[in-house]
Image 1: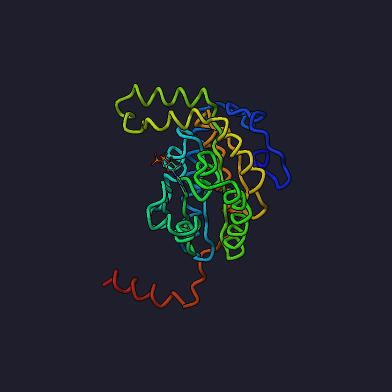
Image 2: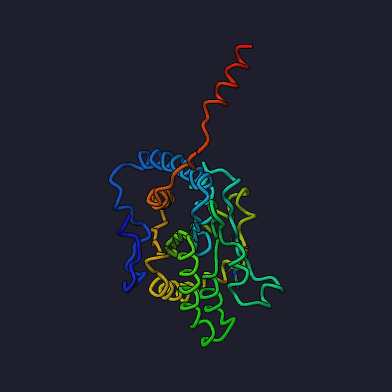
Length: 274
Ligand code: ADP
């Protein structure tokens, strides 16, 4: 898994990262599917422990080009978690009140509290992606945001938030195929937006923006994972394993009950014998 973690100081050139890669799994796709299912179940148990212990906070950030698979990850990887302790937040074009504030304002309000696992479907990184590519603010404004974001995430991490960031890397050809599928399958038509074709024309600009983001904001306290995502099974395999392994390393414990439980047990046993 370490292979896909971007280390501070790395110089990522996305053209060298093959979106079709599945080289770090030697089994078949079917084997991987059953490993994903086990990892999802394990994640469900870890999330229960997270909620019970109420000590740590977990923030998972998903970023990708359109059709990159963010929704697929949400559906699959978190399928065994309890919705009472997990929330998915999707960041869209800022509303008027959001646009009246600094770009981190709406984001900070959605960060996890103790015991919570929050998934960001898009995030503050849009403010150095779409905003940069479309010149929605001048360069002298967006270029300062990498430092702001690192400082913001450091604050969250220092205050007990585990931050895991995933960039789902698909190829332009794969996006074309997925867009065609959306046009052809009536059950997928609703996912198609004409605007996606306009964004697709800016593919190279987006790749440059993603490269900068990966090179400037992957830190020890909030690392990026560069996930080859043309194969959905490999994407889900890596992400489910990474999240499980990171949550397991928190060494969480169920709260210790200090009371003597034997009196309650005796009381209930007496009742059943009555
Ligand atoms: P998704 O593609 O994530 O399923 P939508 O189709 O509703 O959801 O797209 C959300 C849109 O909001 C994207 O085009 C994204 O670039 C845009 N967006 C998100 N954050 C910002 C932002 N801070 N400024 C401008 N646009 C943003």
